[in-house]
Image (cartoon, rainbow, N blue to C red; front, side):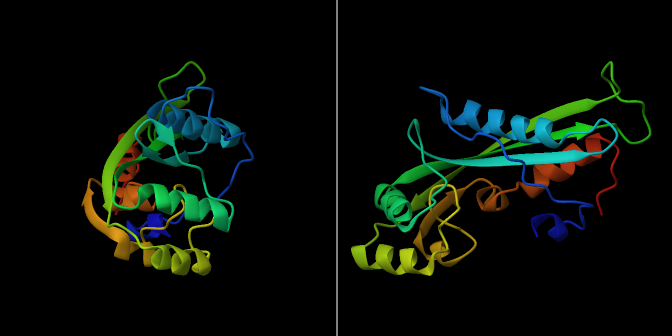
Length: 185
């Protein structure tokens, strides 16, 4: 959906089955990059462009989970209530550069970017949290919320890339693709 906003329709969308458990004492930035790389390598092909991304919500040094239950959504929102937090999205693009033979020994190029945004939530009431949890919108989302949904009403401040907080920084994605010779509309 986000790629369509910049005129790109992927040939295929794959969700690789990788272990997304943070390593002991792993910090948010390296974790986001490691996850995006792992996804790219799990799917990668030197003959095709592969774009992988991973979004991490961090409160200080703490990596918030991709909430898989109402209880986790509630816990994430309670932690983020009235607080500033960071959202990091790592991008990895692999494949041949269009019109070249690539830059690596196997003809494969790999490039990456990390985009960091800062989000501040309003102080949330128990009722606001309960209503949001009931929508189930935050389940499966990093940090337990979807900024492009009803959680938009919680955001008091955003500095950085809105599309990165949604899950894919479009400006940086377009720049990476241009670097590979792709003509982004």
